[in-house]
Image 1 (cartoon, rainbow, N blue to C red):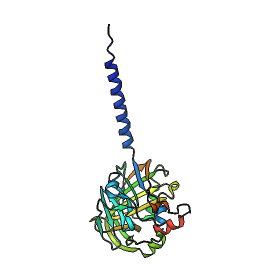
Image 2: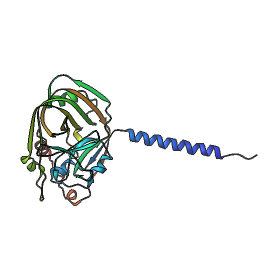
Image 3: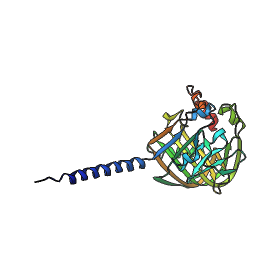
Image 4: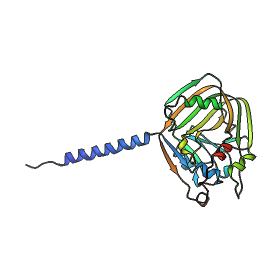
Length: 263
């Protein structure tokens, strides 16, 4: 009698393939924050990166950052990468543009909360913290609604030799909008991420018509809808250029971060 060993072997191979496919699917479904470079490198004056927007878009459709020479604030929303410039205008970034710093994710929010009470930015952040279950995770936050007393900033493109960011923001352009509808795009980073990200909330704003925006200095959320996604996995990509290699990231830049964030 001859034993047919081919069928059990085939079943085993099929089981392994299914198991690996399932593992990959689960790995891909874990919310991931893709981070290119570090906030401390940017604070030190590292304003040129090698990553293109085309490459960055493959990693996420929602997030914040800036562009080479810090020529405008990056606002990634619904898969479109916007650039808010110092003159107050907003345009779509070219796929060949490059970034020295970015934080993006594929946004699939698990929670939606309606806000019907007016909240200044600091109170809004406290209100959000009270509704997050684990402050040691990263969070992507999108808020659509009506905003009042909005102040946003951007800086003009820099030329070499670059000054540190705390010096550059002294020349920032600030634009105010008394009442407007739009979207807040935010990343909340845990305290232990200092140096890589901005601990706490980092907000960029885009008006509903996608014509104005920038880095948020202050605002009041009059009413709106908050969408939140907790992120338990990060993918960190560091530049391999000379500027990053020589950036001094050994010193504590906490005070510089406060100045740059406008807090």
